[in-house]
Image 1 (cartoon, helix red, strand yellow):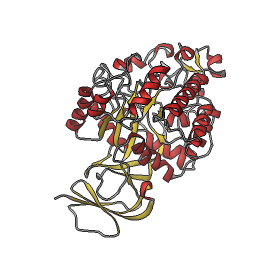
Image 2 (tube, rainbow, N blue to C red):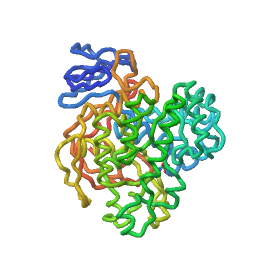
Image 3 (tube, helix red, strand yellow):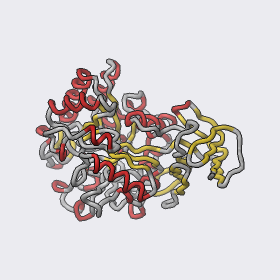
Length: 444
Ligand code: DOR
């Protein structure tokens, strides 16, 4: 029998409406009690002055295995997750080959088990080979452990395929996670379409290309009763569409990334075409950022996810027009979000901030819900709480830890992080998976 006592931390478990200074006792990898008792234990962590939460969940990451193991593997991604404070991540199926069958979903679990770090849950492809034509064997994927379905990286272009995916997935009560982009409208675009793209002479991706797809998907979810999850939402009108759909009782949820909550398209200009700011969907405008914050604050947006998208330096170190889309984010997420959205202070980043944004910010409890119970419920996984009997996945956060984000020190194999050099406050200091304690010691 192994035991662990986490003493005197501020325990925030939003699912159980707990926010108080108390103890958490773990026995054999499970939560045994949350309360004032302090049994004798093999290991004791003094969490005085620290926040103790259910293990954080990043519901949207790209691990490049199989296919591009030089950029990320399940193992390196699972290590990066631990350093970022995440005990569980859900990985997208845009690998090569795609995760579109039972064996490939099982492969992800196998690699995660071998790595022995964070839990990694596979999301299965909606269509075979992610080609958008024929539905994948969703039942087999589900049997292999897929916890949702997505062709992320690409939208589900065919309205008919999307309809059938929503209908079929009802059988498993798993969400269809759509990357909402009308690719005819966004084609050849490399950044947000607007005054900045015009001034730079770059081809833009209009906000409506996202909004049209969000509207289409909501309409189909309304009709089919299927569960729809909108990945990486970025525009003001998309937030409003989801707000209204939720009011109407449509089964829709949404996630937002830290970069879309904090950065604007002006960064492409001020950074002089730094390809780390090239991401899909693109960084939008100030009005969009403020609407996303509002949406997060009022519950329209359920989750924060990194959309961790590793790319090699060779691939990114090219002209803006031809660089791949994507930025990594698992190891910067918590520091950035705590500093910019929760902590009220302004940060003194070394990178010139073109337009300091101050919009509605969220409470610490809202932030924790968006990284624990909300993604767990969306994906239907038994995580995100400290309920007695559940797996002892726990994150311990030091809100006062000041550190500078240095991608060179990341456990991820890639370095394409736009937040390098940012001074942030707040870091996971222990990440605990089924009772196994990892101390997130790098960059402290
Ligand atoms: O920027 C992005 N990168 N957006 C996506 O949807 C896919 C991702 C990737 O896989 O690189």
